[in-house]
Image: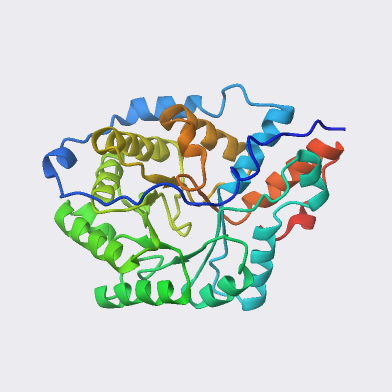
Length: 331
């Protein structure tokens, strides 16, 4: 029988938001243009991360529970229905079998948020009522971000009015590729203002930005414009979250915090589907930014299938047996 994994307190794993909003700052082009990225050094560092000694047994279970609390449980498919969203919300409320959580001492564990298209926001808000799990809505012409600007801003307003507490916006990649940092800054400021009290996550679509230097500069500009989170991908690109890109974005967050004192969150999204991958990302956050960034108000996974594999690993930890994958179809 597995030993119970004890949380520090009864609320640390719940999806509460404590960190003050990022107010942003004036665009500092000298800072932006002074940012560079040593690709070979970044890739060497990233290559060492998965091979490091992994945590085992109770420690691994505790880290996996932490990963669950940081998941934005997501469905962004063209065939989404209200029924599917309600099932997803039920999974967000109870991400792991109750008896498994009881054995681990993690009763009350939930995911960090539920992420849906705008049309599904009212359904998700109703399904999550009373849970304190926020609803996140993708917006601004997701995933390409090429809708007319006024429609993108209107979409943000509509999602906030429908009850979304977090807005995942997509930037115009052309501004980055053309080096038009002022245009990117102005766009992000407008999106930030439209969100009002809702937290805003800036999706950079890093697989379409060309270079790691562009990723670093775009990260910095979005933070200057007031992004509460920076996020790797829509999940629809051919290349989504990778460790080299994550390292660049995380170090941009660290640099911004050191200069301004403001903490900005990070969200890798797309391609993270295995429990062992979540442990690698959590270790990266701890090593580069510290324990404070292991809370769901500063770190999220954008994932649809990750939860299922984590649940299987936790069940094996408690019972000694792996369940069939089809038993964890949602998540």
